[in-house]
Image (cartoon, rainbow, N blue to C red):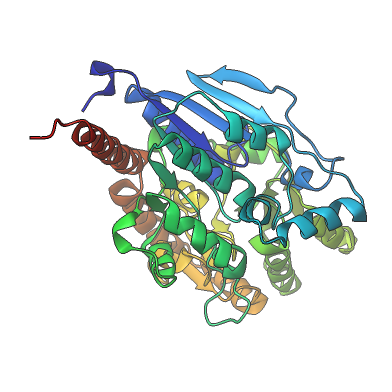
Length: 435
């Protein structure tokens, strides 16, 4: 059904960070928002003014100054994060989160973020959207008010939680932050839940959520937008000779960045030469770790913070191996991008990666933080290009067949159409004359 042939309906997306920052979750919501616009909807995104993710709790980090703008036909409203570096502030939020009143318990709980403008807007907003899609966990300060708005306005609600499943078979696997009692209670009240993988769906099902509400949508890539990198240009720019090992992610312990360096140190000390490239925002924990590395490590590692898409594509084209042994992934779009350049990938046995990466076929999986296994797999892929090429080719074919934005966007728009049609049917039935 083409929305342009009907009254223009409004969709509201709610997410913690959005354009121009396009990490994995942000990219997902942005692609869905564009597809909604293309389907004829009027699209608005409510988000925060955060650029650096650490700005939520550290005002010395970067924020986005523009509070409202329209980009590619999509309206973006950014709400200001309020944060004070004081024990009184943190104590107040924790106290409010422990009260029996649900509003305070949900909106001021972990991760203890105060967004007063957004709360006010969602409580008193008179503008009626026709559907809300809110994410992502653990950010209850966004998802709970969005759900309450949807209930107040009697419109369909979708939650896209992007649950990080953590490491399997561990007592502290991270799901406590994403599927706590509060998160599960919230999911029960959303009309639909959009998941990235079947593993995420199963984890939510185990919490007692109705299976009919859960839809596996997935993420993807647009190949034509990813292709076009020039590896020679990247090598010339950074004066690199020899093989390249690449990681693109936030540089932090959760993403396995220190483990990649430790694995590479094992290889370098064995005389195996390759340059390590780390691309992405540097978090405080990694900054402290890297600061204490010996000088010879600095000579073999290039850390790039934010870069443009051209340099990112060039790096993907230039690398021999893509590595991101993260335990904090609900999907992992960047693996798809690496596969489009026919590169082998290495991830961790954590989150949804064991569903994404076929171990031994299109990449390798290692236990999180196992630097010795990680170093061995990197060595295999560097020293056996036939193996690396075969894995890269397998990944490439899988992406083209299964993981494009066209497929993901078609699924989410179909979900919206079903919800909106159901709502229209209910309204028609509500006003049927009695006979």
